[in-house]
Image (cartoon, rainbow, N blue to C red; front, side, top):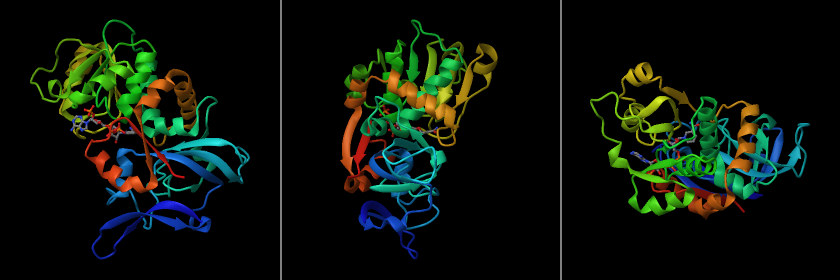
Length: 329
Ligand code: NDP
């Protein structure tokens, strides 16, 4: 028996209820690898899955947790053996497959990535899906020729999970980072992660009739989408790229194509869920080398399984700062 956060749905009212319960290993879904989970974290999607699901969860009872890190207990796949340290993000684990809010998980070997040397399971979940996605975004911007210079790289939703990790990685790589936040009280935190400029959210979340403004940004990791992304596109330097990661501010994009046509601006889509294995491995290795671990430590808010129902609703309200690390044991 082991502990898990189990979400049940009342068939009549449709209401969901999440609580920590003791369940059996035989309750776990099929898979090639059984893992002793050590840490998980809280993402926006987790907020949805802990609550009514937002259409992501198909069957109840459900164990959420879209990412986790731990140690292999048993494996019927040659690539993994007992004692290996692994990390999992994506593949709709925690949505259609039971996830990481449990002391054990059983998953497909294809979904796992070996933890790089130098990264603990706790650090891996301080990074989590949010940080992994931030790394993918930075890699995509680099591949597209992002230039290191005086002009800063903009990070939107900077005090959130994706934004915090993107800020710390970019600053460590030697880019000037301009961090957009709606929380004035987060300025000191963002500066401590390496941001050299703080941009108040209200400066960027209003639409403008001007399709092009001054060329301000050498690149952008955008966790916000919506009006802010539309505005930012018109402020990019010639030939620069925006990595579109999130929709914290909305899924719409009320923009014109003018920045693409007159400034050669690129809009790069970033998906972490179905990312191919080689790229996953490369991203985790880059995280181990390029994310300063003291900065990561400063982002961590520790939590346990029983904290998850309230943290799930906090993240949906945009009230979580940095990275929550859930010690499932
Ligand atoms: P967080 O909730 O931790 O951070 C989002 C941040 O966005 C907030 O902290 C806030 O930052 C800012 N924000 C919130 N609401 C608004 C608003 N209405 N307008 C402008 N800014 C706002 O989430 P994550 O960092 O974990 O994820 C960010 C986004 O990325 C989410 O939409 C998530 O779904 C998406 N995502 C996508 C992935 C992919 O594979 N593409 C993977 C992981 C996440 P501040 O307080 O500093 O303003």
